[in-house]
Amino acid sequence: MMLHQALLRRITAHCCASHSRHCIRSFRASSCCLDGVRVRFAPSPTGYLHLGGLRTALYNFLFAKANNGKFILRIEDTDQSRLVPQASERLEEMLVWAKIPPDESPEVGGPVGPYMQSQRLHLYQEYVKRLLENGTAYKCYCSNRRLNWLRNDAIRRNEVPKYDNRCRHLSQKQIEELEGKGTESCIRFKLDAVKEPFKDVIYGSLANSAAEQEGDPVIMKADGFPTYHFANVVDDHLMGITHVLRGVEWQVSTPKHLQLYRAFGWNPPVIGHLPLILNRDGSKLSKRQGDVHIEHYRAQGYAAEAVLNFVTDIGGGFEGRDSRQLLSVEELIKKFDVSRITKNSCRLDMEKLYRYNQLSLHKCLEDSSEVKMLLAQLRDLLRKTYRERLHSSTAQEKVLGTDYLTQVLEWSKDRITCLQDLLQPEFSYVWVVPDQLPVSRLPAMSCSHAKVLRRVEDLIASNTDSFTKENIARLVKSVGKEYKLKTPVIMKLMRMAVSGLTEGPPVGEMLAVLGKEAALERIQHAVRLIQSSNYEWVPGVSRGLCPASRGGGLAPAVACS
Image 1 (cartoon, rainbow, N blue to C red):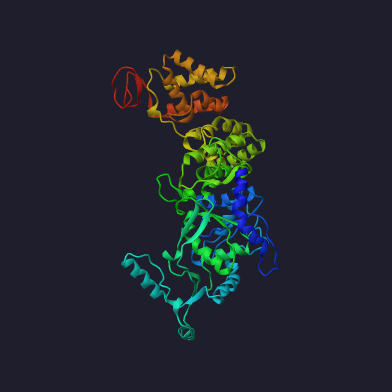
Image 2: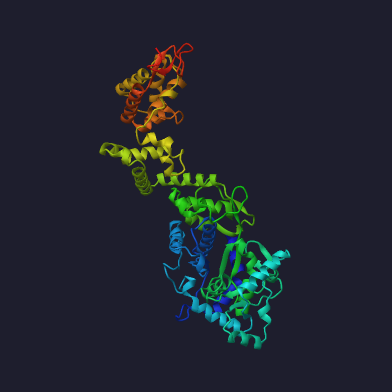
């Protein structure tokens, strides 16, 4: 922690002096001073919040809260062609669900709003005029046709496509002629062709030349909307942002941003870049992958803390992190250390998410208030899934009752990673009587399956011992000995009778979790299915349609005798 505080003092020194000298002006409001650490998450509302975006938001949140600072959500919606309706509202909703709510945002408000860039256009117009006046920006009159020609020509010559800065060198007479014709124009920023050194909080000292990668960039489009880079710099300054933690894909743009700060005469915030998140196979994570959207994880029943632990596990930022331990948001804040964020690209290991969610489930089962929430969620899932098969009030009272659901959760907590797992086919017998019994797959034995099941039914009904898995297993084995059946054979028969499955948990556990009454009901149901099927046990017949080897088996009742 001492290392963390020392690092914080070092990396904030140059920007804190700036913020003590400059007042941050609110939108047409009186000036005010914003003190302390201020960070922001600034997504574009072009779709769902995905893991990469959540990681950026989370690390900004943790850094702010570890230093008694503010976490701001700003929506960067200047690219109107890519907007998705309601995306900004969903983004903020997901942050709240993930337990990292913003202190200032479009919904919450705050002293330096508006927090949507499309509502700040007049500010960008005001500040772009400053750059035109001080000579660091200029109007560009090049047509789209010329720009496309430049691009295609560069590609043909295997060069980096970039603007040739033609309009930077227009004479005053040429500018007046173009203005007189009403020629449409955008505004470009003059890039210096020098390497711009800067200190990256995570990657250390770097130096890149933005001019090597592009020509003078557009900062104000012809439609009056700013580009990302210009609005980003203006807003970070006006909102008093002291530290910027963002994806490493923006590292190459940092020299351009630093030149914009210098053109305005502003001190930049401290900047750090978070490494790429890759798929397990090393491919780049994509927003188009439905299974990396945070809404997908919520819909699948994953807990917010499980997702947060999963993200921090792959990205570093913590000393002595134990992946077998689930940390609360408060614990993550306390343990967070920006100097420990990894520089290397990190790969997703979904097994870790499953494990963290299982830990979260265990934690919830130890808290009575959390158990109530789990039970409510599970009831809702069961009603939606088995609505038609839980039609009777008796069935609903039994299956949806608190005692039964609690018992099932305790029994299954090491078998599932989220509540939705309990809706999988292998668990359906826990909630409803199986529709079908694969009679043709019953184990071969030298006696009637129905007769054996009725014997088990009689012993269970008359037994006064507690209905535990141990007592059940002992009772079933005794019936096996009585009919000279090997234990695996009678256990397979019992498993199929109560669940319709050929594989699954131990029979004793299956019957114990169902309870005595439900176990008897399923055995009786299985006997009826066997007796009403086209197959019955026939001595001296092998499994199949034709008589064969010695012993007993299943055969069509009419075809064989």
